[in-house]
Amino acid sequence: MRIAINASAELLHADLGRLREHADRAAEDGFSGWWLAQTGLIDALTAFTALADVAPGMEFGTAVIPTFPRHPTALAGQALTTAAALGDRPLVLGIGLSHRPVIEDMLGLSFEKPIRHLIDYLEVLQPLLETGSVDYDGEAFTAHISTGRPVDRAPSVMVAALGEQALRVTGRRTDGSILWMVGERTVADHIAPRLNEAADAAGRPAPRIICSLPTCVTSDVDAARAAANAVFEIYGQLPSYRAMLDREGAAGPGDVAIIGNEEQVAARLSALANAGVTDFSALEFGTNPEESARTRALLTSLLAMV
Image (cartoon, rainbow, N blue to C red; front, top):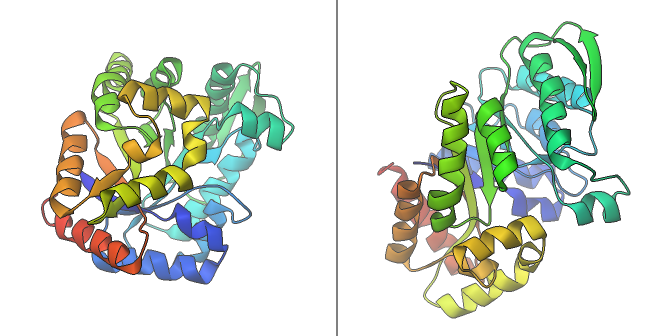
């Protein structure tokens, strides 16, 4: 299991300079990848182009870009331009449906037929990324385009899939799934079997499973767990994440967050690997500088064991 860093908490500061420093340090420490959510008013793919000279060789990935606000032709163009700016660096285009309260209540868009939306989105997006051409009439999206691409190498496409239908679509059509707030029991019993079965039936390689969770090395587990429940409270309320927490038998986000001393955190990461996770993307958090330092030190020490 590869270990990467989820830098999405840094978006709270909306500072490209801070993101640059964060990515540079992650590369110096030897992490396999650096993942960034699409949230707030910093655009993840545009940020990657601004960091093209930072951390050579380290994989960059979006975790994730919501599909409803962007037409797949627009996202294809932006992703290919970003890939061209990054050169030989691996780029993962992680996309997701987001959530009905976000899409409808915050953005005023329709969340109608999300699985149909996802299928049509991929039917337009992937051919454009791979060939620059698409000829498709769908219910949610239609596109008839043939044009040049700024780079021949297409980004890898992954989907934040949690439900059964989304996992089947993801396994059949993409390189894997990007998870958030999903514990090892749910990965082993729900995510990995459905994803791998769909990929195998479609004749595709075994998919990657990118799992991201809040991670904290601490001597005060109760305080860190309470902090995680407070900071990540919304994820215990959004229906798709709530369903995953229920599968795990977790009351709230703090119960799936990876919290404990060095030995306990390392054991949780081992359990995730055994459950089928191929890449762990740590969202580091701490209630004080010592916890933050211990968390990074442990994650760095585990890189040699991967």
